Length: 97
Image (cartoon, rainbow, N blue to C red; front, top):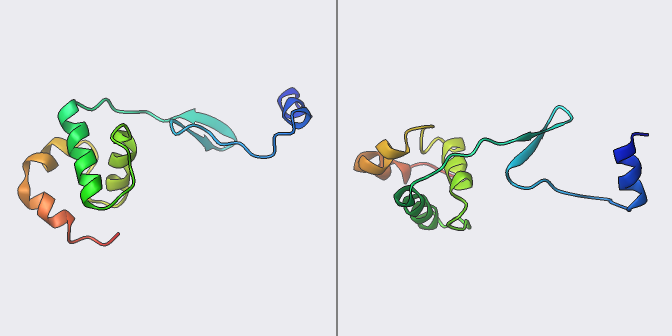
């Protein structure tokens, strides 16, 4: 038994969860790279998530962006283009979630 496992067993940890900036990958913990958004981008992402009825907080900009990237609404590193192009924003409503 490893020392860390011994401590967890002694403290009776049954379940624990990583913070949102970390993830498990192949038995290792990795820090997720986060992007710094401008205040305009933060406001846009939050309003976009609210218009889709999503339950995010304004400070969750990276999570909001990841959601829209995973659902292929916004392409990675193309947020500014999405904000400026009204056709792209209109087409976002045509996707199913």
